[in-house]
Image (cartoon, rainbow over all chains, first blue to last red; front, top):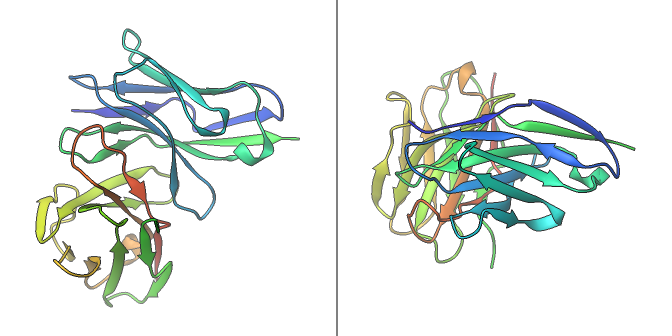
Length: 112
Length: 115
């Protein structure tokens, strides 16, 4: 069965410092992987997705993620955090039936 | 091109009442997915529909919950005889095709509160 594990439920960084949100997946095949962001009381917005074309994926708002098959990881990074990045981030795997499998989410706080 | 629309955005029901949540997919999308988000948790898949067909309802509770996506009109998620444990945010997503790589576009969600 597929599963997604986000290792940190809460990450706090200072504005201007790097962001690292960790994600590991478990799957019997190479899945499609996504990162979505959810701002308070809002819907989910796609940040980026991996579909086996390139292991380093660039997304919106300066985020990127690297797919590492040997580590079964898909960590999300950003060189310099902005106050507007404060939100909840979900690592997601594409299921074999077309549905999405969500991690539990990581809340990112950005301190001024 | 309007995004995925859901209404109502907020819904309050008393125990035992019915809740109807509506979802209009993006134009040109014929695949609809419903997810439930309980407080402090990620989203959990409930059901996947195409026009007039339920493709996968493996995530939906067997009782009180039903979903449809008619030929005309929005997709409806219906919860009968609601209980307090049904309080959650319900999100709808749509995509133009069903493949493992297809991006799903999410609506703003309906937040259901059961008193």
